[in-house]
Every structure is written in C-alpha cells, then in structure tokens.
Length: 326
Ligand code: NAD
Image 1 (cartoon, rainbow, N blue to C red):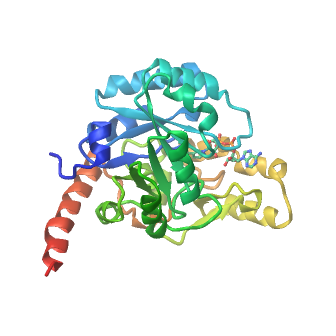
Image 2: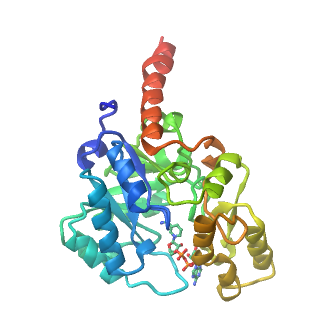
C-alpha cells in the first residue's frame, strides 16, 4: 500500500505508515517485528526477551534476514526477579547500529550516553506528562506516551490516552507517539487528531498470525471484551494490566493480605507468562493485555491488519470527517 499519512515519525524513522509495534516481552520476536516493518510499519524487538547479549545479537541478525526495512529494539528498566545485565545488551544495540531504541520503565538517563554512542535515537515510553518533560530535558528524541488503557505497566496515575496525549503534546516539543488503547483505524485517526505523529500498538499485534503466541492466547484475545483486564501489583507501585484469570485474582487477593514481592513472585514470574504464551494454558500465569483487547475480533496477518487500518483511516478522514465539514 502506498503512503497515505506522512508525519514527523514516518519521515524520521524512514517508514511508510505511522504504525509502531511496541516492544512486548516474549512476543516481539523477529518474525513479528520483520512482518510489521515489511508491511510499512515499525517493528520493535524486546531486548530482555533474549536474556543474553548473544541471544539479542542472534535475534537482530534473524530480523535482518527477514527484512531490509528499519526496526528498533526495546530496553525496559523495570524491577525484575533476576537482575539483568543491561550494559551488555546495550553494547549489542550499539555494535549492531540499531537506529531507534525504545526505553521504558524508568528514567533512562544513566544509560542514555551509552545507547546514543552509536548514533541511535531514543523513544522513551512514559506514563505521565512529568516523565515526558523529563525525557525531553535529558535528550530523548521522542516520547511514546502511554495512557492507562495500555497493556503491561500503566504507571500509577490512571490518566487515559484521551487526556494524556494532548496534554503531553502541549508540554513538549519532541514528536509524540500515542500509546495505550489503540487497535484500529479509528484509533489511528484519533491519535493523529490528538497531536501524535504515530500510534503504537501492542495488544492488537498479539492477535496476528506472525506473533509468537499460542493459538489459545490469540483466541483469548479475540473472545475477551474491554472489561476483561485488571490491575495487579498496585500495592507494590509496579502496577501491571493483565487479562483476568485465576492467577491475577489470586495476586490481588494476596496483595489485600499485605503480601510483598517475595510471596507474589511464584505467581507473577514472567516464566509463567512464557508458559501461557508457549503452551497455551491460559491459567498458569499472567498475560498482559490492554483494554483495547475488546476491539480485537480476528487474527489477521500483520500485512492484512496494517493495510486494513490504513485503508479505513483514509476513508474516515477522506469521507466521514470530510463529509461532516460544513
Ligand atoms: P520478572 O519475571 O522478573 O518479574 C515479574 C513481574 O514482577 C514483573 O512485572 C516485574 O516488574 C515484577 N517485579 C519483579 N521484581 C519486583 C520487585 N522487586 N518489586 C516490584 N515488582 C517486581 O519479569 P519478566 O516477565 O521476566 O519481564 C522482565 C522485565 O520486562 C520486567 O521488568 C517486566 O516488568 C518487563 N516487561 C516488559 C514488557 C514489555 O512489553 N516491554 C512486558 C512485560 C514485562
């Protein structure tokens, strides 16, 4: 599909469409990332998924085998049960000449000089206007602003995308990527109308043919409605939005009894989440999803999804909105 929307992000990233696939633990594997980039969007690998420097280097090589289009790498600095060697993962990102790095979870300042050593530009994913201003002040090049509808870690302030995106656009000068709650053409047009230069989707990409998720998980996404997600780990100030299941309910019950991370670890561990994704047993761990899971109704290929979104967005702008203009 030829280019329909030209924005500061499509120009800077060298992509056709302002659609970014956000870094998702375990799911953002080379096949998905390359499919997004090949379809004209921007795919992002998640460094922590590959655990070691060698694993990440291999994933970058595999992605390059599958696409000659640009793609990025996410590095998330959230608390983990097992300490991560961020330095060696960032060495790989620099050595491999990755052009766009998505940081998330915590102020990336301690790592920024290292990441930018090879010339990479940094998208910092944040959940408040305050953090977005900080990201701009320390030299991040873009902000991906995440409304609390999002999957995974929405922060602690519960501001929805409808307010958070324009508030951030008003507060910073660097280009904004709209994240949290986006799953279709209506979301794309809304994101651009709110002042963003691209939309970021995670949840919607899990239910695609190329995503590294068991068919049961994809079907779970198709079946779930917008009311089927819930917060866990709010008592630890590390809130995570997940699909409701017995494990999530148990975590919240234990939190109510004052449980700390040591007690919760056997339930919240990412290794259990990996079992959900690989084995399709949807009750053995936590599975993140945003509220927009209620808008996921099929499991298309990535190209079908992106072409549909761009085609429908063009219709919304060129016919529906244009027809409303007096
Ligand atoms: P993990 O198994 O190390 O931890 C499981 C969960 O417990 C995570 O949400 C983690 O943040 C939380 N946690 C761990 N130690 C904690 C502590 N001391 N205090 C409070 N909370 C604590 O995590 P994982 O599944 O291997 O994921 C690795 C990292 O990637 C984590 O930081 C996780 O939050 C993050 N993550 C990123 C994405 C993404 O899309 N980029 C998605 C899921 C998880």
